[in-house]
Length: 157
Ligand code: ZN
Image 1 (tube, protein in one colour):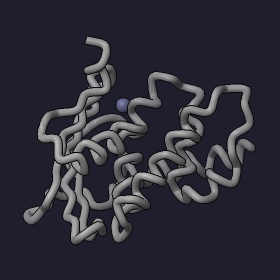
Image 2 (cartoon, helix red, strand yellow; image 1 turned 45 degrees about the vertical axis):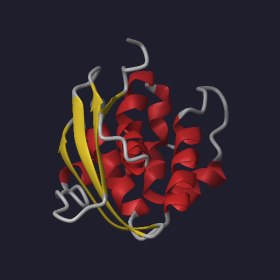
Image 3 (cartoon, protein in one colour; image 1 turned 90 degrees about the vertical axis):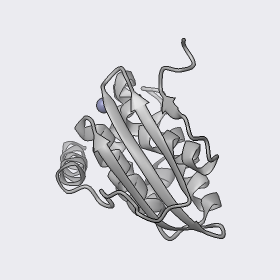
């Protein structure tokens, strides 16, 4: 298990160091801002949809290694896929990172997640779950075409 954790850590560090799709799209159909005030993670996500397919996606901003690597993996995972597939992937990802400590992780789902499965360990650090899901919430906000900044803390205030 420690070998696996180490491998996962390598994946996270590598995406943090060399984030995929780390660019502003000049031509886009949807965009949204995502902000996690608890950690200071702040990203903007741009999408280009052709019909129901996400043909291009980019993000920019700054934050911790978890949030940045998660945004990088999110963009790489949904690019070229349909909106429906992206939403299904988010549901799977969310179910994994929200798995209670002590409950068995859904191994099959983690396999389906590919590199995103590397973030499964954040479930042990509740404050980090918001870092890991921030880019996904921004993606959802962009797909809903909401132009406002989504904040992980907005529902509490
Ligand atoms: Zn963070």
